[in-house]
Structures are given as C-alpha cells and as structure tokens.
Amino acid sequence: MDTETPSIEALIAAVLADIQQKGYSSIQPFDIGEVEQRMMHFAEVNSIALGSDRLYISAKQLQHCMRASKLAKGLVVSPDELILFPTSRFQMELYYDGECFIYTDGQSKFIIHPNYKMKVATKQKKREAYLTIPEREQTEPMAKVSREIVKLVNLITATRIKDPAEFTLPKYIKIETDRNSK
Image (cartoon, rainbow, N blue to C red; front, top):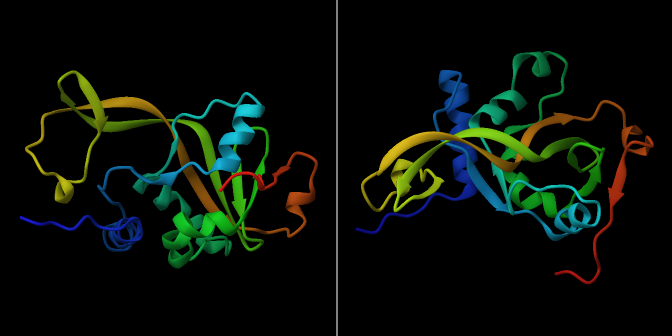
C-alpha cells in the first residue's frame, strides 16, 4: 500500500484549519527542516546550546500565533506566511536577541527558541524513543506511547512588526550569511 507523506506546508495548513474549525489541533509537533547553517554556526561560535539540528513547530505554538489578542491588535501573521515559513525563512534576515533567534522579512517576525523544552508523545521500541509519526504516516503498529520532555529548536511565535526600527536596537545581533556555506 502506497501512502503519500503530507508536505510540511500541508501539515501546517491542516493545523491552522483545525484551529479555525475546532479552536485546537491534536496534530503532534513536527519538524519543518534542518536548522540552517548560519544559525548553527552562530550558535557554535557563541556557545549557544541548540536543542536539536532540526527546526520544529507545534499546534500549540501555531495557535499562539493566531490568538484573538494578536488579531485585535492587528499583529497576526497570515496563514499563508505561516504555511510558507519553512521555505521562506532562507530568504529572511536572521537576528539573535540574547535569548531567541528571530527571522524577519521586514513585515513579520518569527521567533525561534534554540533550546525549547516540550512534552511530546514518544513511542518506545527497542529502548529507543523517537517523536511520534502522525498516524497517517505510520507504517507499523504503534508501540508503547509515553510523554517525554525533550529539547528542540522550536518556533514559539510569529507576529507583525509594529516598529520598523525594532531591529536597529542594540540588543539585536544580525547574523550574516556565511559565504562559505551552501
């Protein structure tokens, strides 16, 4: 039986649709790609611990991005921006504020926590724990499921930029593209 794995964009769209329809989504956290080289290099040079080498996103954090208080203030980023973030981030400027990494396109900002603790469903198999694969992607029956706290590089929120001069403040360090990396 050939089942097609949904794209990252389709997973984000499914989470956003769930939130719109039900107010929540039960889709487990999932990775949206590798932590890019400029973030990894900056973290290494500045002794910043990265929780993983993959960038994750969760339904809870996407719901946080779309909450009513942000909507009332005009700070909600569009669903399309969230859906396209996994690929558009490579064309964005990247900053570090002493705690988090921030991607920005000048209109919106996407805040990434480098070492975020998250409780996720894991399954045990041969004493190895790994993140749960969404049910539609499983190729074998689920083993024993438990919830564990893991550390991940994780999107924690996205919002519209109120002040275009925000990233000129001294607390922001712009991370330049490493010309020697791919």
